[in-house]
Length: 227
Image (cartoon, rainbow, N blue to C red; front, side):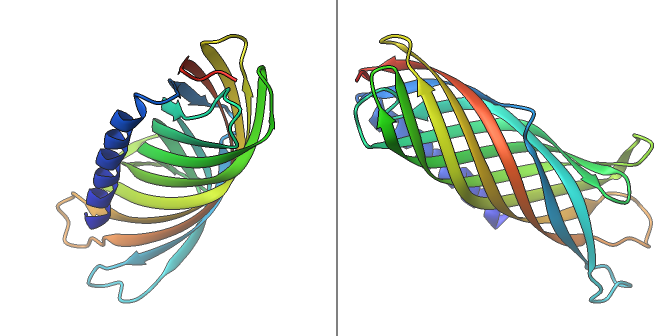
């Protein structure tokens, strides 16, 4: 719960930042993740029920994390070395367990990207830099037959970093299309919540380390942002 409150506070700080950028050169638009959003994770489950003791379980998942949402950038076309990009997204995530079944999660993400333009002219900007991600996700377990287990809820918070490469194409004075490719290292902390009525239950804590190649495309409307 404390981590969830922290994520909410970060969103509030970000919205306050948007008010400050309205008077500056800025690009505003929407983004969507492309199908390459594939990764894998090493997961550790620590049951805390009365009959499990301190036993830990390890399992792997193939993760398909796709989002879409709002994007802001401070230097899409300007002849400036540095640009800051903010992505606020919502996504449907599928984490498939190697032994069968999957977690189907609703996810809210916030990405902070710090880019440096290595090649710039009035039509194209090539940039690269680090990205920091915060994520909150919750959802259900779907068994191998495709049935939803209504007795369990799963929730996660995550933080991650990774390198990002971007290409901005500026066909005019107002619009930009941008392609972003990166590799992300995520750390998730989660838990499940049992809602059944049997006394033979256990709830668990989860730690997950995820590595993911990702790609997204963005479309911007620019304000006071020209070469």
